[in-house]
Length: 260
Image (cartoon, rainbow, N blue to C red; front, side, top):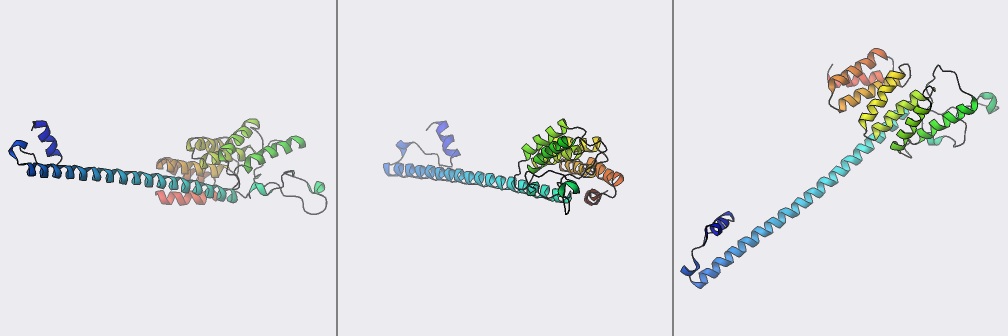
């Protein structure tokens, strides 16, 4: 037997055979059978390990898919709650062809129709002409509807709100659109774009009702990135600059969790 063959047999846990010429035929056959059985056993063990490995990879992929579904569901729930806290109702409940606003005179007798719930900010810029105003509000409402629980077309909503902000940079609805642009990116897990959008709300529209919420979301994004110092700074700024806003209570709670 060659030295290489002996090494292979040792690695396989098989006894190193003496020269076949020194053994009777029956013993040689028995030795060969033992070797074949040992090799067969090792092959079966290897096949079993491969099967278990495939099953584990399948389970890992399944768990990963479930985690992604749970994350998406959590973000959907979060966005729905955020819309409700902002004073809104799903935009899809509005009449599709109804004008966003109307005066009591235009409505006739009875109570005037309520404006869309998403329209909550009022800027100091002069109002546009009636026809233009209706068009602006229609474009805003169309973008907002993409965020509704019925549609959940978040990437398309981000594109629509970004286009609205670019087209109407000074409109009274632009702070809202900028804020919902950040939310659309956030629920799409595009945190870098969400951060940039929320920062624009705070920088450009500090007096908007959306500013404290945007600042709070900036803190949450910092916290998610492991930047606890920056998160604390954002939460403290909410408390300092907007102490009476709903976001202040949320910021205080996060500060308590992080440790002031």
